[in-house]
Length: 251
Picture 1 (cartoon, rainbow, N blue to C red):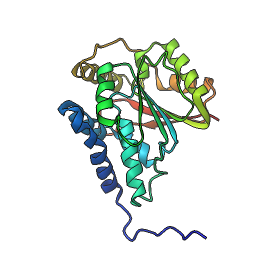
Picture 2: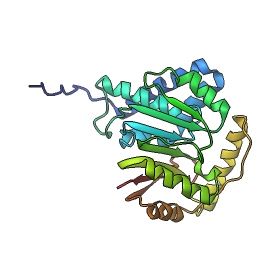
Picture 3: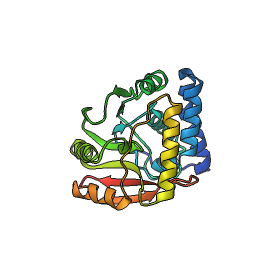
Picture 4: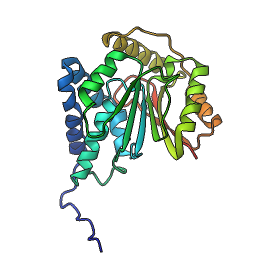
């Protein structure tokens, strides 16, 4: 008979847990150069979506596909959070800890893929990093799909086609985590678009046209593809943007 788990005398404070995970997730980027390391620290530290995903247990799926993965920040976060949880310090107030078994990152920009490979390619998770257009890249069978701030780079027809392929790749009960800008919030959406273009230039990429939608259109699109429920979470805390995280389940 297995002994019951030993309760921690001093449960880890969520802020202390996040700080430790953040530091660990940024560390691999030192070997990819100063830009990669500073970008990782800033993005993981200031963007509220990453902590939210951990707190709510949204990254507990064993097989993760990260579309628009950039330099692989999510792969490093998954690895660090999983290792932290294995130490017995996972905050009790948070949802289930990540326990990744497979990670596939898809990214169009070859410079970002190279930085990702240098930083996280050798992690025990053995991330599979693919340099490809998300509109054509094959999607492996998975439990979670993450698309953060990239779907607006393709037109409305391509958005719908990609989301249909995501639905088909997800296992029953799987989760799509899609962050979008709410075009109905004129000022916040304009601010996010301006910053998006600026960051794109800083990263050395060409600025492309974008295709936004109001939040209710995003929800209707996902529901029309069979996702249910579709839960919107405001995801702009501490920023001037109009970002929303849509958590959509495949029944």
